[in-house]
Amino acid sequence: MSLKYSNSIGTTDFRDDLTPDHEVEENLLQPVPIGDLNDPLLAKAVELITGQAANPAKAAPRPYQNLADERALKLENILKEVNNQN
Image (cartoon, rainbow, N blue to C red; front, side, top):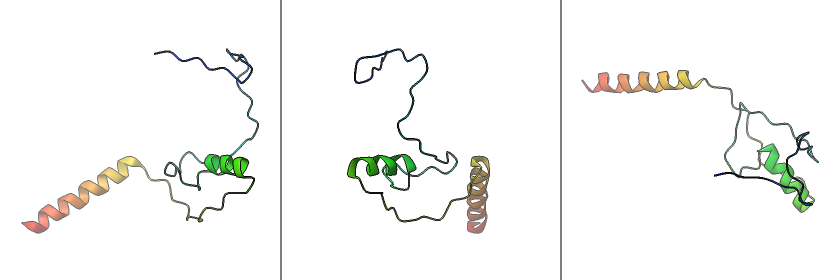
C-alpha cells in the first residue's frame, strides 16, 4: 500500500517538510493514554477547535521506568509467590 499526502491546495511532495502552524512541546518519555487531555498535542487541538484551553486534571509526573527493570520486577514477584505457595 502506498499513500501520498497533499495540502488543501493540492500540493504534494513537500521538499522542505511541513511547517507547523502551532508548535507544542511534548515529553516522549512520559506518554499518556489516547484521548487524555494531558496529552499536549490533543490539548492544543481542543483549544484551537473550541477557543478555550483544555483544562485536564493535573496528574503527577510519572518517572521514566526502564522496561527491562519492570520485567525483572514482575518476574521477581512471580517467583516470590511460587516460593510462598511451597
